[in-house]
Amino acid sequence: QVQLVESGGGLVQPGGSLRLSCAASGVIFSIHAMAWYRQAPGKQRELVAQITETGTTNYADSVKGRFAISSDNLKNTVFLQMNSLKPEDTAAYYCNALYYSSGWKSDWGQGTQVTVSS
Image (tube, rainbow, N blue to C red; front, side, top):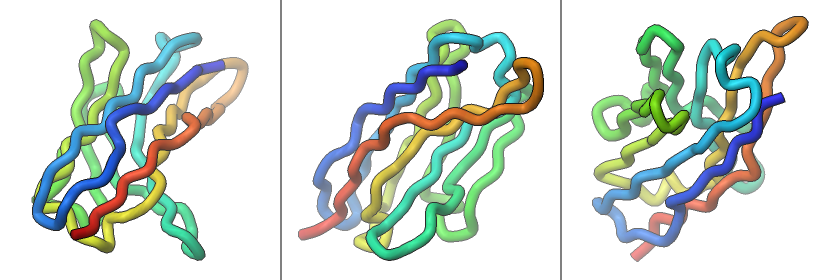
């Protein structure tokens, strides 16, 4: 099992920036990819950004050019730098880890709220 703890959410004005962090512990040597998802009230959870163990990244079209995902393998932490934030970015953001341990598995963090409002 992989334990994930997110931090860095909060209230920010449109056009502002936030940096989310996700610290992983547990079976971290088996992690294939980590990702950030978000879920706004009344909407389905959606993929925001993903980074694989080889450093390959993938972004939702709505955040390309504004968000950047990165990892610090020494600290087992994944970051999501969010710039030029818009009100439509308001959501609960969740960290996810995809890993192999007697089969492919996926674990989630508890989520951190991001609110973009003036």
